[in-house]
Image 1 (cartoon, rainbow, N blue to C red):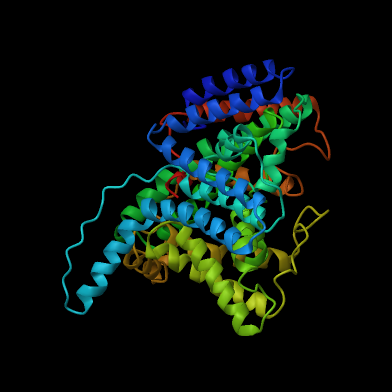
Image 2: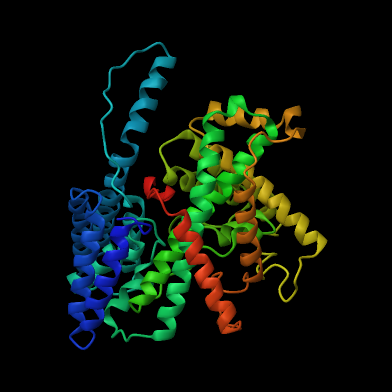
Length: 478
């Protein structure tokens, strides 16, 4: 079920009403309703996917239960590996089987050996990369004794399948989300209104920004040989705002929806295109995944505690694995490696934590140095996005080659002024709200009621005007 669909527009109010009608009952009834609603929401795409998420839930619930019951380190380590192998095994089979088979055949062909291995027609279950990491965080934290295992299967199932963030995050830690299923939830009018505002901005970013940018970025990337370097540069700019509007828009809707039900989810985006270096960018982009890899991969590998070689090794590992997490294609691996290269000078010069504050805090405009830093960081990000978006490495390199040609200094043959104006509106609103949790958050100050409601109605009107085809979210494929 898509957030930008009529189905969800009917589904959400029904679940919301039933949920709060149960507010005076035992909390287990609300949790059970969340489980039922979440399985309907997830099964809307393909009911066969439900078996996988249920299997993963049962395995990790059982592993957590027995981890709590035993103190024998050998047994505890074995139980942890059961969870890791089951979750990563499912993820590896559905997402990477054909990738490894094809590369295995190619490798042997290079040495003159022809091997017949059939690829499988595998449907990638929606959101499998997200909920496998979410359940893994639970078993790892229980193994480390950072949290107690739950004995409430309904609450645990609700945690794994919680529909607002199930298919594209944020990737919630068990330590943050799971305890909320044991707390009495009371309807909070102010939080609900703020949640609706965040949902409205998320829909604007998805329907108005991302889907319009997608039309032009797809057209340009699909026919890049026919366009000038200036047009291709504009194409990757469109993709940059497509993926930002699409993914951060989903996160906004997920977080806003959760507030309607009395839950607090982790912030996943913090205006990343205003970053002044690549380290700051990764503190602001897909925050739940970046911190997941930091805590469960980078730090266990030694983090930054070792010498220079260990820092370099661990940086490349975390970025390449992050790239491979996004998809079974060498383009994603190169995208990850390229970001590692960007990150290395900042880390080795101990400047990776220079920009922890909000850019131009308390000022209307950034300083000249900050502005140049933002432009350079955005430019590096654009270069990496070419690999992320291209179908293969050849297309990515060819695309960059055309951008670097003399045709970069010509007038673009594709120049949709309306879309560029919409991107400008997005940037202006988010710049003025960069110190807030989201672009329509008014916790720090409240504009006049006429301005606020005028903004809401204007955004809603624009969204309705652009509603048409129900475009899926980019990260559903990951």
